[in-house]
Amino acid sequence: MTSLSAQTRAVLRHPNLLFFISARFLATLAAQIQVVAVGWQMYDITGDPLDLGLIGLSQFIPFVTLILPAGHAADHHNRSRIVTSCYFTNAVCALALLLITLGGMQSVWPVFIAMMLLGAARAFSMPAAQSVLPNLVPVDSFKRAVALNSSSLQFANIIGPAVGGVLYLAGPSVVYASVMVLALAAALLMFQIRGATEQSNLTREPLSMENLLSGLKFVRSRPIVFGAISLDLFAVLFGGATALLPMFASDILHAGPAGLGLLRTAPGIGAAACGLLLALSPISRHVGPWMFGGVAVFGVATIVFGLSTNFYLSMLALIVLGAADMVSVYVRHLLVQLDTPDFIRGRVSAVASVFIGASNEFGDFESGLMAKWWGAVRAVVIGGVATLVVTGLWARLFPVLWKMQTFPEKK
Image 1 (spheres, rainbow, N blue to C red):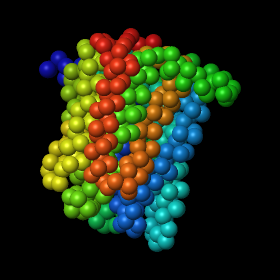
Image 2: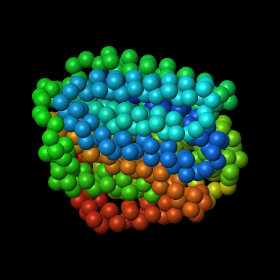
Image 3: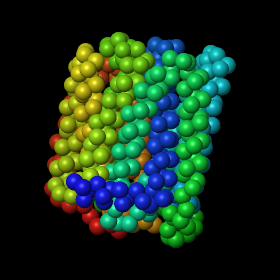
């Protein structure tokens, strides 16, 4: 264990990686604080679960529209500068929400517009951030760098919702002002990264339909990559319950905004603990079974959460859900990055981001719509069952992924 810890500390001696992890930590912290405020404020004003889904949809539409051009940009421009610009845009969105709140929210549509701008920024930041990480550390340190980065993001997921819930007690304007400061700090840290973009990334190619679709063609030609990211798409699309947490906290668990913050924190607790274990002891064998197992446990935990009427049991289910999700995310991220050449990594990451974005933002909309039709409990339980069905189906459709024993060598 001492040797493993020493290896992990050695990874953190790379300055660019420290700037990168710190910036993403602050940006994720800001996002998690903000999502508590937006969700609670919206549900408090309208009382309509569909509006919770529309928050996700308003981010998904610009995200899915811009993600392929964003992937092209990540392969032909400085990736760290793209992320810096996106974090600055996040600060602008927080400022807009602050002004909307201070002016007295008469309509929910200005919030949706701000969320659309946030979705556009996320479209450009995801492929750029995912593509730049492999170039920040040597190949032999990459697995631990991924685990440390993922773990730091999950710590932000732990702290953010709890802080957001407490800050909301002082009013949503306090939340949005805090988010703006954190986003600006993240942009400043990301700006400090130097020399992290390889020469191949700086070549210029015309923005054509062929170039935009090249990432999709590459993914389709790699059964391992395609199977991994499509499994994540359908599993989280059906199994996502986080969009309905304001409804569960308010109407089922009667926990209030502070309880909502704790519920949003719970998946991050499980994911962060799992991420630290992966940083100390990365997965190196039985790669496929680990990934499918993580998704299956995610589905079971979703069902338990949906059926629970006890706050502590719900917290435990969400903790297990977060740990299981970390395993599948860790394996998927390594598979995509290691099996993709650097010159096309941005476009491939953009395709992966479409799948991830669809499962998150569109999954939020699907959850809100199902909750409006069937109620929150049925929507979550049916989603968890669907996740288990998808896991079994994907094991049959992608046997090469199911039977995969080791990670591929970096391209």
